[in-house]
Structure formats: C-alpha cells, structure tokens
Image (cartoon, rainbow, N blue to C red; front, side, top):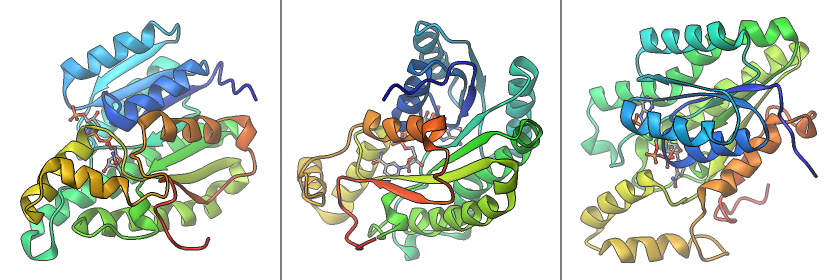
Length: 262
Ligand SMILES: NC(=O)c1ccc[n+]([C@@H]2O[C@H](COP(=O)([O-])OP(=O)(O)OC[C@H]3O[C@@H](n4cnc5c(N)ncnc54)[C@H](OP(=O)(O)O)[C@@H]3O)[C@@H](O)[C@H]2O)c1
C-alpha cells in the first residue's frame, strides 16, 4: 500500500517535538505540505528545517495554542500561504499530572484551553475551507486514557474525553460535507512528555524513574513502550484517501494496554 498525500496541506499542532513532529514528518514523507506550530521558536525552526529537506513546503508559525488570538493568527497565515487546508491534526502538550486534591481551578481552566479549546478553535477557523472544497480530515491526538483512565492523570482523563464527545458530535454535523473526524489514542510513547510524567510519577510513588518506565512497559502485552512513528503511521493513513470510510471513531495505538473488548 503506497500512501500519497501530494498536493495536500496539513496543519499539525504542537509539532516541534514528540508525537506532533513524528506526525508532521510522516505526512511530509507522503508528500503533504506542512504548517507547523509550537511555542518555542528555536525548536520549531529546527523542526521546520528538517522537514523542508524532505522536499515539501513548510510554514512554521510560533503559536501558543491556549491563546485564541494566536490560533487566529496561525489559521490566517496558513490559509494565506496555502489557500486551503486539507488536513488538521489537533495536538498540543499534555496538561500536568496529579490527583484531584492537587489541582486548583486555574489548572483546570488552563487544561480546558490547552486540550479542548485549542482543538475547537483551530477547527472552527479551518472548517470553512474544508467545507468549500468538500474534502477534509480532522485527526485529534488524545490518549489511551479515553478508553481506560490512567491513574494520576486527572486533567488528561477528563478533558480528552470531552474532545472525543466533541469530535463524535461534529463528525455527524460535517459528514455531509465529506469531512472526516477521528481520534487517535497513544499509549505510553517515548517523548519528552513521557519523561516529564515519569519524573512526576517517580516523586509521587517513591520509585526510581527506571522503575516507573519498567512498570509502564508491563502495561502493554508487547512489554515495551511505543515509538512516535507508530502513532504517526496511523495518522498518515487516516489523512489519506485510503481511509475514506473511517469516520467518527477513536483508535488506540497503545500496544494493547486498554483492556475493554471493543
Ligand atoms: N507521549 C505519550 O506517551 C502520550 C500518551 C498519551 C497522550 N499523549 C498526549 O499527546 C500529546 C503530544 O504528546 P508528546 O508526548 O508529543 O508531548 P511533547 O513531547 O511534550 O511535545 C509537545 C509538543 O507540543 C508543543 N506544545 C506544548 N504546549 C503547547 C502550546 N500551549 N501551544 C502550542 N504548542 C505547544 C511543544 O512545543 P513547545 O513546548 O515549544 O510549545 C511540543 O512541540 C500531548 O497532549 C500528550 O499529553 C502523549
């Protein structure tokens, strides 16, 4: 199966490192032009330079996805440069870990902006172009926690489920315009975010970081962590014409961690 996305343009959130970068690289390898964003200009520029070398056009826009003004700027610049956007991958950093008692109201409000509203507001701005061309793909990076909660990830467990509810409802509304929306759910995957969570779990649980990683490896029947490109492969497929009848669904890439039967 040869997946090609030549002539398509994708916006990928949080794409200077980790899962977002792997997804951007996967889409570029299939021929898509890319709009990248993240808060830190230096790492964003380095990511953009690497992807340009793959022979596609790249626009990098430093953006804090918790700011509606900055989301507006990102969407405006993307549409000005490319005329339309075909593929939107909603992704950003994860909210802090911690139990309910350690999370004040500000943490909840910030997590709502980061995890839910960033997807809602970026989608709001890019949907008209997708509707006009009657073709679009929206893929939300959520977490295996929407199928089986991860202890200690109160904010992530709560707000990613909100993303899934929003996406399922929107899929029903924009399906007639031939815009497909799906969620992908990484399990424990080796990125900076995972390292941050390992450090936090190590302090909370009184285990070494190596012991935390070893315990996570055992959560999957494959007894190892995931690699970013293993999630990216699914996103590239979902973005392509190969996935033309996959809509409104939520797919785990977690090595089998989630124990529900379906
Ligand atoms: N890795 C895993 O095991 C795993 C598992 C399940 C779910 N997830 C979720 O998947 C998403 C991506 O995870 P990851 O592991 O790739 O994280 P990561 O390695 O920390 O990368 C996060 C990326 O998002 C950018 N970012 C962070 N906050 C942002 C903001 N406010 N506005 C714009 N960009 C922002 C970061 O760059 P800047 O810091 O420069 O902005 C970076 O490019 C997260 O939501 C994470 O919680 C990850």
